Image (cartoon, rainbow, N blue to C red):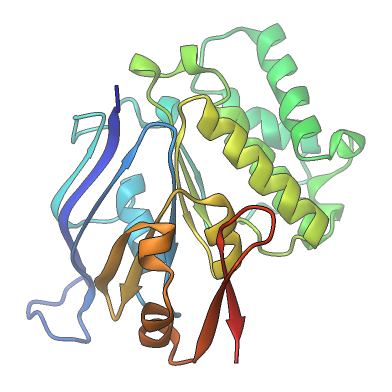
Length: 266
Protein backbone atom coordinates (compact mmCIF):
# COMPACT_ATOMS: atom_id res chain seq x y z
CA UNK A 1 0.00 0.00 0.00
CA UNK A 2 1.36 3.42 -1.00
CA UNK A 3 1.68 5.75 1.97
CA UNK A 4 1.69 9.45 1.15
CA UNK A 5 4.11 10.92 3.68
CA UNK A 6 4.48 14.55 2.57
CA UNK A 7 1.70 16.59 1.00
CA UNK A 8 2.25 20.18 -0.16
CA UNK A 9 -0.96 21.92 -1.20
CA UNK A 10 -0.96 25.37 -2.83
CA UNK A 11 1.90 26.67 -0.69
CA UNK A 12 2.87 30.30 -1.14
CA UNK A 13 5.64 32.21 0.60
CA UNK A 14 6.13 35.96 0.52
CA UNK A 15 8.90 38.25 1.60
CA UNK A 16 8.37 39.01 5.27
CA UNK A 17 6.50 42.28 5.65
CA UNK A 18 5.35 42.42 2.03
CA UNK A 19 1.62 43.14 1.82
CA UNK A 20 1.08 42.96 -1.92
CA UNK A 21 1.53 39.89 -4.08
CA UNK A 22 3.93 41.41 -6.58
CA UNK A 23 6.46 39.43 -8.56
CA UNK A 24 9.19 40.74 -6.29
CA UNK A 25 7.48 39.84 -3.01
CA UNK A 26 6.40 36.27 -3.83
CA UNK A 27 9.15 33.69 -3.25
CA UNK A 28 6.96 30.62 -3.82
CA UNK A 29 3.61 30.87 -5.55
CA UNK A 30 0.89 28.23 -5.01
CA UNK A 31 3.12 25.17 -5.34
CA UNK A 32 1.68 21.68 -4.86
CA UNK A 33 3.34 18.26 -4.89
CA UNK A 34 3.59 15.12 -2.78
CA UNK A 35 6.10 12.47 -1.75
CA UNK A 36 5.36 8.91 -0.69
CA UNK A 37 7.27 6.99 1.95
CA UNK A 38 10.36 5.50 0.33
CA UNK A 39 10.49 8.02 -2.51
CA UNK A 40 13.18 10.55 -3.39
CA UNK A 41 12.03 13.91 -4.75
CA UNK A 42 14.53 16.28 -6.40
CA UNK A 43 13.68 19.99 -6.57
CA UNK A 44 15.34 21.62 -9.55
CA UNK A 45 15.40 25.09 -11.03
CA UNK A 46 17.55 28.16 -11.58
CA UNK A 47 19.01 30.32 -8.82
CA UNK A 48 16.28 32.25 -7.03
CA UNK A 49 13.46 29.99 -8.22
CA UNK A 50 12.31 29.28 -4.64
CA UNK A 51 13.83 25.82 -4.10
CA UNK A 52 15.51 26.44 -0.73
CA UNK A 53 12.62 28.60 0.42
CA UNK A 54 10.16 25.77 -0.17
CA UNK A 55 12.45 23.34 1.63
CA UNK A 56 12.58 25.72 4.63
CA UNK A 57 8.79 25.84 4.69
CA UNK A 58 8.59 22.04 4.77
CA UNK A 59 11.06 22.07 7.67
CA UNK A 60 8.79 24.51 9.52
CA UNK A 61 11.38 27.29 9.60
CA UNK A 62 9.41 29.99 7.74
CA UNK A 63 5.80 31.10 7.48
CA UNK A 64 3.66 30.15 4.49
CA UNK A 65 0.09 30.03 3.28
CA UNK A 66 -1.50 26.86 1.99
CA UNK A 67 -1.04 23.53 3.69
CA UNK A 68 1.85 21.16 4.38
CA UNK A 69 1.05 17.85 6.04
CA UNK A 70 3.45 15.13 7.13
CA UNK A 71 1.80 11.74 7.47
CA UNK A 72 -1.54 13.53 7.50
CA UNK A 73 -0.64 15.93 10.31
CA UNK A 74 -0.04 19.65 9.74
CA UNK A 75 1.35 20.62 13.18
CA UNK A 76 4.63 18.78 13.67
CA UNK A 77 6.29 21.10 16.17
CA UNK A 78 6.47 18.66 19.08
CA UNK A 79 7.63 15.71 16.99
CA UNK A 80 9.73 17.41 14.32
CA UNK A 81 13.16 16.61 15.75
CA UNK A 82 12.28 12.92 16.05
CA UNK A 83 11.03 12.47 12.51
CA UNK A 84 12.54 15.20 10.32
CA UNK A 85 16.25 15.75 9.64
CA UNK A 86 17.37 18.86 7.75
CA UNK A 87 20.63 19.69 6.02
CA UNK A 88 20.59 23.43 5.23
CA UNK A 89 22.54 24.98 2.39
CA UNK A 90 25.03 26.38 4.88
CA UNK A 91 25.82 24.70 8.20
CA UNK A 92 27.59 27.08 10.57
CA UNK A 93 29.49 25.52 13.46
CA UNK A 94 32.52 27.31 14.86
CA UNK A 95 32.98 25.44 18.14
CA UNK A 96 35.90 22.97 18.34
CA UNK A 97 33.75 19.86 18.83
CA UNK A 98 35.10 16.48 17.88
CA UNK A 99 33.52 14.99 14.77
CA UNK A 100 31.84 12.23 16.79
CA UNK A 101 30.34 14.88 19.07
CA UNK A 102 28.90 16.82 16.13
CA UNK A 103 27.23 13.70 14.76
CA UNK A 104 26.12 12.76 18.27
CA UNK A 105 24.10 15.98 18.54
CA UNK A 106 21.55 14.33 16.25
CA UNK A 107 20.66 11.76 18.90
CA UNK A 108 19.60 14.32 21.55
CA UNK A 109 15.85 14.17 20.67
CA UNK A 110 15.76 10.38 21.11
CA UNK A 111 15.68 8.11 24.14
CA UNK A 112 17.47 5.12 22.66
CA UNK A 113 20.20 5.10 25.31
CA UNK A 114 23.88 6.09 25.29
CA UNK A 115 25.19 2.76 24.05
CA UNK A 116 22.82 2.57 21.09
CA UNK A 117 23.38 6.24 20.27
CA UNK A 118 27.14 5.69 20.19
CA UNK A 119 26.62 2.74 17.83
CA UNK A 120 24.45 4.84 15.52
CA UNK A 121 27.05 7.62 15.46
CA UNK A 122 29.74 5.14 14.43
CA UNK A 123 27.47 3.61 11.78
CA UNK A 124 26.69 7.05 10.33
CA UNK A 125 30.39 7.95 10.29
CA UNK A 126 31.12 4.72 8.43
CA UNK A 127 28.33 5.41 5.95
CA UNK A 128 29.92 8.75 5.02
CA UNK A 129 33.46 7.31 4.97
CA UNK A 130 34.68 9.52 7.85
CA UNK A 131 35.29 7.05 10.68
CA UNK A 132 38.95 8.03 10.58
CA UNK A 133 37.93 11.62 11.44
CA UNK A 134 36.01 10.63 14.57
CA UNK A 135 38.39 12.30 17.03
CA UNK A 136 39.37 15.25 14.84
CA UNK A 137 38.13 18.75 15.64
CA UNK A 138 35.37 19.84 13.28
CA UNK A 139 36.91 23.30 12.85
CA UNK A 140 40.09 21.77 11.41
CA UNK A 141 38.38 19.94 8.56
CA UNK A 142 38.21 20.79 4.88
CA UNK A 143 34.95 21.96 3.32
CA UNK A 144 34.20 18.55 1.84
CA UNK A 145 34.95 16.79 5.13
CA UNK A 146 32.66 19.17 7.01
CA UNK A 147 29.88 18.46 4.54
CA UNK A 148 30.23 14.72 5.10
CA UNK A 149 30.13 15.23 8.87
CA UNK A 150 26.92 17.24 8.56
CA UNK A 151 25.44 14.54 6.33
CA UNK A 152 26.35 11.87 8.88
CA UNK A 153 24.63 14.03 11.52
CA UNK A 154 21.32 14.27 9.67
CA UNK A 155 21.40 10.55 8.83
CA UNK A 156 21.97 9.73 12.51
CA UNK A 157 18.93 11.81 13.47
CA UNK A 158 16.54 9.53 11.58
CA UNK A 159 18.60 6.35 11.64
CA UNK A 160 16.03 4.12 13.34
CA UNK A 161 12.43 3.74 12.28
CA UNK A 162 11.59 2.98 15.92
CA UNK A 163 12.69 6.49 16.97
CA UNK A 164 10.03 8.23 14.89
CA UNK A 165 6.32 8.46 15.75
CA UNK A 166 4.44 6.01 13.49
CA UNK A 167 7.77 5.30 11.83
CA UNK A 168 7.46 8.57 9.89
CA UNK A 169 10.86 9.79 8.70
CA UNK A 170 11.55 12.68 6.35
CA UNK A 171 14.97 13.80 5.15
CA UNK A 172 15.38 17.33 3.75
CA UNK A 173 18.64 18.11 1.97
CA UNK A 174 19.65 21.44 0.43
CA UNK A 175 22.43 20.95 -2.12
CA UNK A 176 23.87 17.92 -0.30
CA UNK A 177 26.57 17.30 -2.94
CA UNK A 178 28.15 20.74 -2.46
CA UNK A 179 31.92 20.44 -1.89
CA UNK A 180 31.90 16.68 -2.49
CA UNK A 181 34.16 14.99 -5.04
CA UNK A 182 32.74 12.52 -7.56
CA UNK A 183 33.43 9.48 -5.40
CA UNK A 184 31.73 10.91 -2.34
CA UNK A 185 28.82 12.20 -4.41
CA UNK A 186 28.19 8.62 -5.50
CA UNK A 187 28.61 7.40 -1.92
CA UNK A 188 26.11 9.97 -0.66
CA UNK A 189 23.50 9.29 -3.31
CA UNK A 190 23.78 5.57 -2.67
CA UNK A 191 23.22 6.22 1.05
CA UNK A 192 20.13 8.29 0.23
CA UNK A 193 18.71 5.49 -1.87
CA UNK A 194 19.41 3.03 0.94
CA UNK A 195 17.50 5.17 3.44
CA UNK A 196 14.61 5.47 0.99
CA UNK A 197 14.50 1.69 0.66
CA UNK A 198 13.70 1.60 4.40
CA UNK A 199 10.72 3.92 4.06
CA UNK A 200 12.35 7.34 4.48
CA UNK A 201 10.89 10.07 2.26
CA UNK A 202 13.65 12.30 0.88
CA UNK A 203 13.32 15.81 -0.55
CA UNK A 204 16.52 17.34 -1.89
CA UNK A 205 17.48 20.48 -3.77
CA UNK A 206 19.96 19.65 -6.53
CA UNK A 207 21.68 21.75 -9.17
CA UNK A 208 23.15 18.70 -10.91
CA UNK A 209 20.28 17.61 -13.15
CA UNK A 210 21.97 14.34 -14.07
CA UNK A 211 22.34 13.36 -10.41
CA UNK A 212 18.66 14.13 -9.94
CA UNK A 213 17.78 12.02 -12.98
CA UNK A 214 19.92 9.10 -11.82
CA UNK A 215 18.87 8.88 -8.17
CA UNK A 216 15.46 10.53 -7.70
CA UNK A 217 12.05 8.96 -8.28
CA UNK A 218 10.28 12.26 -8.92
CA UNK A 219 11.23 15.84 -9.70
CA UNK A 220 9.65 19.20 -8.98
CA UNK A 221 10.75 21.95 -11.36
CA UNK A 222 10.35 25.53 -10.14
CA UNK A 223 10.41 28.48 -12.53
CA UNK A 224 10.22 32.02 -11.15
CA UNK A 225 8.64 30.83 -7.88
CA UNK A 226 6.00 28.69 -9.58
CA UNK A 227 5.68 25.02 -10.42
CA UNK A 228 6.68 24.35 -14.00
CA UNK A 229 6.42 20.58 -13.78
CA UNK A 230 6.01 17.78 -11.26
CA UNK A 231 6.07 14.06 -11.87
CA UNK A 232 8.39 11.23 -12.74
CA UNK A 233 11.93 11.99 -13.86
CA UNK A 234 11.00 11.25 -17.48
CA UNK A 235 8.02 13.61 -17.28
CA UNK A 236 9.99 16.52 -15.81
CA UNK A 237 13.47 16.31 -17.31
CA UNK A 238 12.70 17.09 -20.95
CA UNK A 239 14.37 19.36 -23.51
CA UNK A 240 11.50 21.82 -23.34
CA UNK A 241 11.52 22.02 -19.53
CA UNK A 242 15.31 22.42 -19.32
CA UNK A 243 15.10 25.18 -21.92
CA UNK A 244 12.39 26.93 -19.89
CA UNK A 245 14.27 26.55 -16.61
CA UNK A 246 17.79 27.50 -17.66
CA UNK A 247 17.48 29.03 -21.14
CA UNK A 248 19.87 26.51 -22.63
CA UNK A 249 19.45 24.00 -25.43
CA UNK A 250 20.22 20.41 -24.50
CA UNK A 251 19.96 16.90 -25.83
CA UNK A 252 18.33 14.24 -23.63
CA UNK A 253 20.02 10.86 -23.99
CA UNK A 254 19.53 7.61 -22.12
CA UNK A 255 22.10 6.36 -19.63
CA UNK A 256 23.63 3.16 -21.06
CA UNK A 257 23.41 1.25 -17.75
CA UNK A 258 20.60 2.81 -15.69
CA UNK A 259 18.19 3.92 -18.43
CA UNK A 260 17.76 7.29 -16.73
CA UNK A 261 17.75 10.51 -18.76
CA UNK A 262 21.11 12.20 -19.28
CA UNK A 263 21.21 15.91 -20.06
CA UNK A 264 23.89 16.86 -22.58
CA UNK A 265 24.60 20.48 -23.38
CA UNK A 266 24.70 21.51 -27.02
